[in-house]
Length: 391
Image: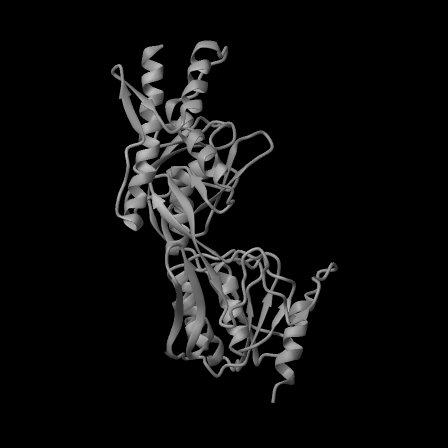
C-alpha cells in the first residue's frame, strides 16, 4: 500500500515538474510542487487528487492499469480542465506520426494498413516498394512487428509507429498469407515523401490550373512553386488554390507559401502571451506575385490554411469561394516530453492583414457556394468563371 502511494506522489511530482520544466523556456524558472512529510512526498497543490488515489488503492475491486497509463490519464485530466480543446496531450505513437507528417517524409516499407471487420490488420503494398518486392500481397495479415504481437487492442497509430523508422534501418514483420503459417520478412525502410501539394491543368480550360494544398509541412513552399512551374510549362496562366479540408500545419510554412504570391507586405499579425503584437511580413516580391488567383475554402479549412487564405484575400490577390472556414486562429507550442509523448499548449492568436480575427469565427467567403450533392464541383466551376472574367 505504501509503495503504491509513494508511486502516486512521485508520479504527480514528475507530472508537475515536467510541465514546469517545459515552461522554463518561456518563463525562465520552475517550481517544486511537492513537499516532504514524514518521509513521504505529498502534493501540496492537489490534495484531492492524492486523496482519491488513496481511496482507489484501498477500495477499487478491478485491476489497476499500468503506471504509464495512469500518468497519461492525469495529464489528460489536467489539460482538459484548462478548457481549451487545442491544448492537448499526444502519446508517443501519435506524436511520432504527427512529426513525420509535418516533416513531409518518413522511412517506411511501402504499405497501407487497415483493420478488417474481424479486427485483423490487413496490408496493401505499394508497387515497387520494399514490401511488394519482398513478396507481400494485397490482403496479407500483419501478425507482429519486430516480435511484438499485433492484437485487437493495438491502435493503427501504434502499428504505423512500429513499422516506420529511420531510413535504411531494418524492420521484421510477421505476415500470414491465407491459411499458411506466419512468415517473417526482414525489410529495409526507404524514404517515402508525403506530398502536401498536387496540381493539374483543368479540362474545362487548360490555361487554368488547380493547385490543391492538403497541409503545411516543411516542404510545402518548395512543392507549391515546383507544381506551379510545371503547370506554367504546360501553358497554365491562372491558378485556383484549393484549400478545402486543409487542417493547417506549420505556421512558418504558411507564411512562406503566402510570400510566393505577395509583393512583400503584411501576411499576418500575432498576439502572444505576455507580449505585444508581432507583424509577419513577406520578404519581398514573390515569384508568383502577379499570377491571377482564386481560393476555394470550406469548413475544413483551418489554422495555417486560414492564415494563407486571409492574407491573400486581404491583400487583394483573389476572392475566397465556397463556405465559411473552420475558425482556428491560434498557435500551439509543442513540448516533447521525455518518453516521446507531447503536449500542445495554446500560446498566441492570429489576425489577418486587415486585423480580422479568425479564432472561433472563421473567414466568410467573398462568393458563397454550397458543395454539390451529385458529384459536381460548383465551387471549382465558380472559381473558373471568376478567373475567366479577368482582363
